[in-house]
Image 1 (cartoon, rainbow, N blue to C red):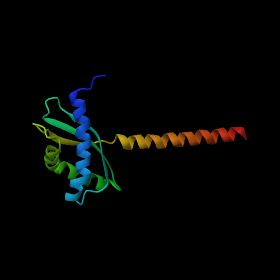
Image 2: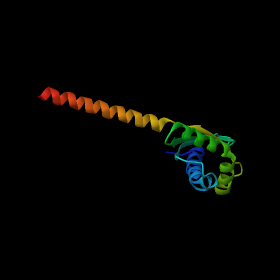
Image 3: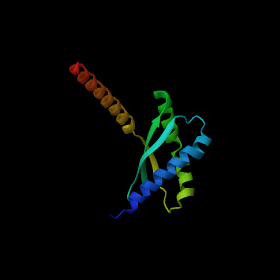
Length: 128
């Protein structure tokens, strides 16, 4: 299976941006709280733009939105740090997008557990 250049770049951007956020950005912005996970990176074929999908776990919705706001405001800083790490001719503009798929997956897992417990309860009642 042949791996394209953009898919390799997507993977490298994802790792590098996660390292920058958890390192120098958290040091620069102490207000950045919660667990931030970079779930995907999608670099355009012309290398001008990159969509960065991130998932944020925070104690409440306000903290989550504040953390996402800080990420978007510091996209230029992250881009600069990324240019020091990646050493490419052109560095894409970064656009952060909130990814709720992990939260949706956790919610679905909870529903499946409830269904399984309900099913087990019904089976136990039928056996008595």
